[in-house]
Image (cartoon, rainbow over all chains, first blue to last red; front, side, top):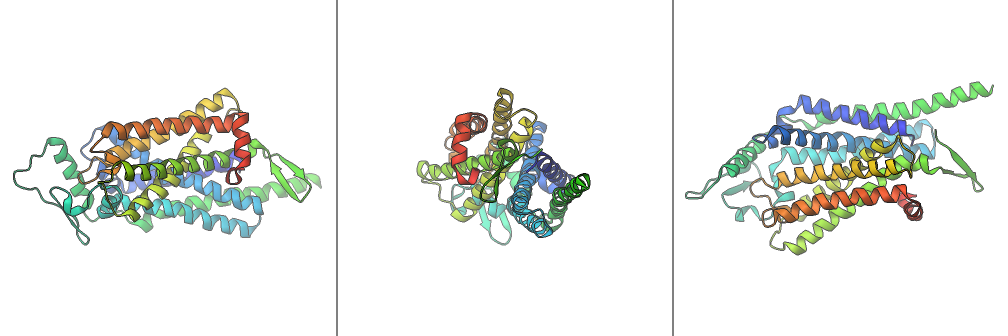
Length: 193
Length: 166
């Protein structure tokens, strides 16, 4: 893979992530609500790294693998398919983590929901916080509770619309890599003639 | 520019420089995945009281943390060092900083996510210092190790022997 292809695919992936971050700012940043601006910047960076840089890098690897086999149209189509599959896998897991509190709890929790103090889990309605009477809650925990409650509301962060910029980024990367290669081959043939 | 060396049986070998972007990304995917998988199993051994459903945790740690974070770390490391010749001191330092910082950012966000009520991955509640240390120190060490593998003769010889990274 030439460095230019990786740069282009990562740049397009980052653009896709930034479009999503601007468009779905509220649901994406919901977990960072109540924290400092510095943390919000760190959180936004993490989202761009996961949704943009990682998918761009995986697109670059898919393009590179197919280009090694052949520079033809079939390889270009396969490169697009592999790019979409790889980047969608990462994005779907991230999307699920950002929107589904049950999934996030299962992925990160230490205790079963029934053992978690003050927490009642419900598969259909997500997490419902239940403050036990007499339970001492400090300010930090209150902030976390608010964030988690916000995290459990139905999210408008639509997965298909959110993936659209990534599909476009993958398509443009493939066109750049394979279109550019064919153009270079044509140019080199013309030079030889 | 991609340079290639013709070899007898109709195959060609790309130069180390041409293989550098993919190799960097693949190396850090492998490193990140090994680290995440080790953390997952060590966490289960060190904090046996934490018994979550394993499938969501496997999906999160293997796909997003292993492959996604590794790919991002590799891409950032390569882009940070691509101006410099592979094997140079500047390339080594920038590769280590790029990858290490990415892992550290991810660990800090992970620490925050585990601060939410009901969440306690890898003993975040029982031993927060250990959580931060294993992530930040481990991430920095992974960045440095990857940079050495990619920018030293010994490291390149080792990478050439691994089919996935060849």
